[in-house]
Length: 195
Image (cartoon, rainbow, N blue to C red; front, side, top):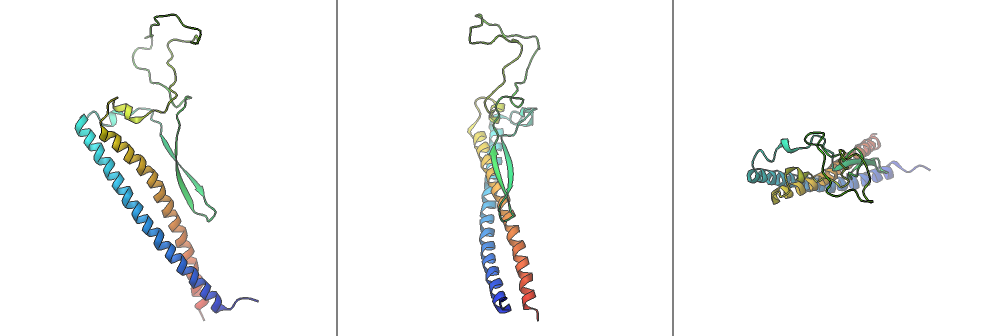
């Protein structure tokens, strides 16, 4: 036995009410996260400009960027069971291989002198090839060893901003999915109300 149209209409209206409350709650979260993201970006740019002022305009510029930059984070997306997409930030690890090659500066025939002969622990190899760096390279090192605190603050603000940007994108996608459900329930409600 099929439910009465009035019962269906009340069920659809209850679902619409719940979706509306959920949508308003998610919109409030989105607004607060966007405000926090804007504050982090402003703080990062202000710290970056303060470090440019203290270190010199030419010292903190695009000229210090490496030619073969490797990202330290990546954004991965995955589908949830309700059909929305969630974005996650993952740290990239630079461990050897092709990603962590050392840039050679100077003449190619320049060789380091060994004051002692090679020990048993040192492998015999080509002395002109430099070893591959196995640790993660910190972009702050591009600007020198003793960087100002404002440059470190800018880096941490932008790292937090990346995490928050992924949350904002996930929340926006979730809100779009709720809005699609809301429109389909509204259409269903209009069909049930039609004579």
